[in-house]
Image (cartoon, rainbow, N blue to C red; front, side, top):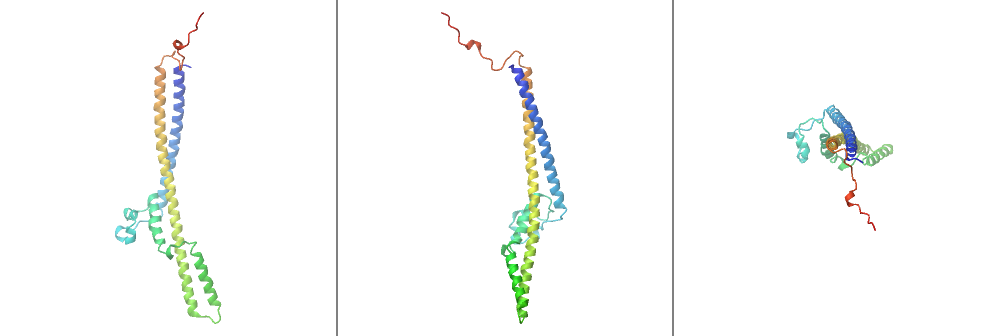
Amino acid sequence: MKRRTLDVLFSIGGLAIAALLLVAGIVLSANASFANTYVHDQLAAQHITFKTADTLTDEEKQQACLVTYAGQKMTTGKQAECYANNFIGLHLEGIANGQTYADLGVPQTAAKNALTAAQKAVPVDQAKVDSLQKAYNDVTAQRDTVFKGETLRGLLLTSYGFSEFGAKAGQAATVAYLGAGLMLLLALAGLVHAYTTPKTQGFAVPDKAREPQKVTA
């Protein structure tokens, strides 16, 4: 095979790969842009604002990101992660000794059963009923608060995860663009080399001078 032909074939292949990488980069960039815009718009619509620095409690001041984002409106995935884990998560730990919505189902059911039994007792001990009613109301209120907190926390972390997919897509797009640029340069270099190489030059042609000579008797 002629060296020029081989160079041209490799260059065409390089151009095709560069084109594919360019298309991939464009698609990834579009996905990254969509993810970032979507997360921004959805979070901004919630009108969630971080507490200002002067209103943070001592416990909240120990959370570095709450200090960093103090007073800011939530519009990014990183802010959503901070608010979910370092604000909501922090306060959820202080409710019912950190028990979750599922955990509180057992004591709530037990409190309800105890209250029902006291109400059906004969004679009715009103003081006991009132005490059990208060216990049931307290655990129900705790469970409702934890449910709301866990739900909001989950939604914010979902937004954060979506924003991370966008960030990864942006990074992948950059790599694709760099790869496309590199392949384009290599392909152009191959074409230049092809047209500066003599047409008659072959590739991996055996060196006749090194071929063993026939011995004649």
